[in-house]
Length: 330
Image (cartoon, rainbow, N blue to C red):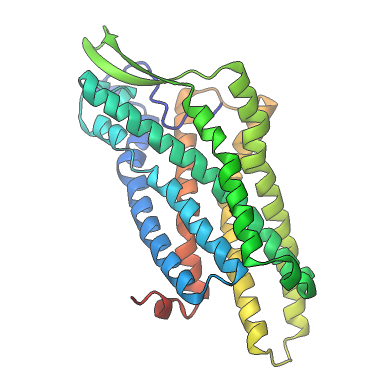
């Protein structure tokens, strides 16, 4: 099962009394759950950016955290799928069929908005995964090779690395959007004209999606972040045990706090991406469930997990950084 979030493909109509639970879950997610998480997450990311910028962008880790908040905000913006919300809230019989039961002009606007949101989601997820991988690498060097940290890792080099990610990942969501087609036609089963954003991937797209985009944008970052976080946490634990009776300098305390923040961010990433990785492995092995209802629920769950991951930065900062409240004061 290849993810088709936001594709608005036509499905069979269900009588209102027989609407599957999966569609009710999808409606609740699109109209209520996702927007609420997104609003809270965006506010949190804005406050986080303010706090990080005030503390200084000369610090390499602050550059990465700022870029991460921006990338995560792109993912959160994709939750405001107004066309989908309107379709669900319209209480028309086509509300359960992912088509826009409106005139052609409005439907074409919905089509453009849908593609824009799809771009934000695809692009933001890939950037976020890459930046979290850079965070893991930066902390790995800081913990295992502290004497080389200043000479190897600089704010400028990390900014350039993020810029490379920004450039490298732009073609993929654009290529994704090229497989969408706007269709406005008559649907005899409902006796209405309606618009539809038809997603029709070719063989090349399917191959690139399964064997390039997902591995590079999800699977490889997941493995690197998970394994790196475990190694860093283990090293940090033994280091703290050795220094338990020693009085740590202010610089050491600051370094430990920074590591705790960054590793917590990485841990949230690993936990929330686990479901996506399992889905990907199921696709590769041919063991995925082809039931449409199951896929609808699974995609809703994975999308919520992506939003939670993108909203977690603020929670991590507030929990670990005791100076956060002071930094966010305008």
